[in-house]
Image 1: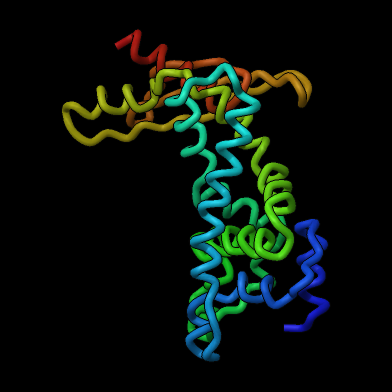
Image 2 (image 1 turned 90 degrees about the vertical axis):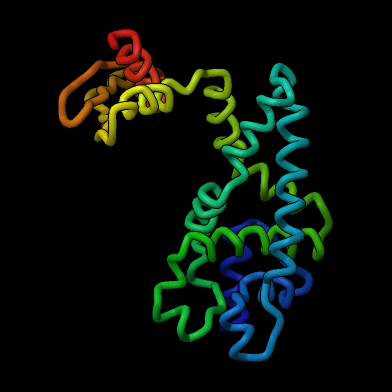
Length: 226
């Protein structure tokens, strides 16, 4: 992989490495490391996981002073996860820069969620080693603040979808589906309408300021009807 290719990734993530080998190491999967006799990104991933948890915890502690410890823990668990890291990898096109072994490339490794999520943690650690906490912190907060904000809006809600599922499955396996059947308002102030169906039959509708809250409201009303 050419140096200028990694420079493209540096532009994507907004950080210029003093030691480009750190970035290369962060993108080196075990399959490539085994084939070429070099170090993989596993140790960087281990460090990056800790940095990610610390930075996100500090950010939430300072910004969301109204939330209690248990609520902060729930928000962090919802945000600091494989799915969120995978989204970051997709946003910055990490798949194009991974060093993968031949077998991993053939089996679709460039699109594998776990590999991409792990590479984000490794890159965070590489940024920390290369430039200290600040660039790593900047990258984490810029990429997770919207997810964190969204998660805080639902942290106090009772999970009516789970309660409904448990209630309906008491007598055996059932098919529960949620559909967004309408939305209105400008982009900055949308209202969504959702419906919940049991084995294809509509149980209830709900309205909310997000798709998730509309589905939650539909589940709540379905429970009340039951």
